Each structure stands twice: as C-alpha cells, then as structure tokens.
Image (cartoon, rainbow, N blue to C red):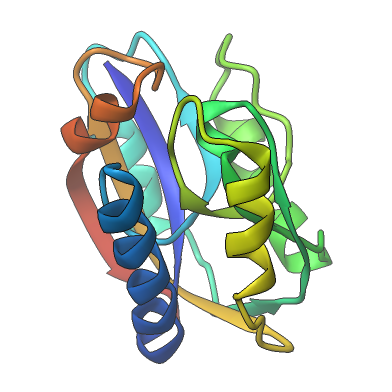
Length: 172
C-alpha cells in the first residue's frame, strides 16, 4: 500500500480551497479531495503502524507558507496547483521523515497544493481556471494526516477516491 504524509491548511483556508477543489471537480467531472501538501510518501508498505506512531509523537508546530504561483501540467497530480515556497520549517519537517524512514519512493521536496487532478484537461481550461483564483498572502498549515491507498501510487483520476485517512492530528 502507499502511505502519504499530508499537511492540511487551517480551517478557514481549508474551506476556501475545498470550495475551489469541489467546484473544479464538479465542472470537469473529476474527484474531490482534501486540499493538502504531501510532505512525504511511502510505497509498498505492509503495515503503517510505525509511520502512524512516528507521526503521532513527532513535535510539529503550525507554520505558514507563501503561495508563489498557480501552475499547471500534464501530470495527473499537478493538473492545476499552487507552487509553495520552501521554508526552514517545511524543510525541517520533511527531513524528520527522511532521516527516520528509508524508502525507495521518490521523495523530493516539491511543495504544492493541488486544486485539480484530471487527465486530458486542455491547457486553455487550466489557464482560465488559474486566472480566476485569488491567492492569500500566506497559507497556514495546522493539521497532519496520514493517508493510505491500498493499491499504491496515483495513476488515474479515480485513484483519488481510494485515499483513506488513517490518522490525523493538530500541530501544536
């Protein structure tokens, strides 16, 4: 199974971005999902217990990231997304997982908050949607979630509907 460590925005910002995700999903026939940044990922995990326990006990505080720009690509997990700055806090949190767990998953620190997962979406549609989105000056992340997908990596739009939250905690 695949395991993903997500950082989720605080409630007001989460609601704002959830509204965008839901609107785009409905308009383009895609799956909705919780707005997040993937901090770290694991594939071929047989038991997520150690990852969940580490996530439960790790000392993490809420922190803010500046959204840099809205971008798009032909990659499913970056159809339409917000590229985020890399800060000391974000990199430190990433390195905590990287130093604790050895994995063959390609874990590059590439912070982005996805707004849409859609195969075969026209570039003109992506650009039009991006132009309609207003970004805040900063997005505060105050929740950590451990997400699993029994079949591993995301390759298709419907794979998004198979994410299951196995653990959640506030950052303090």
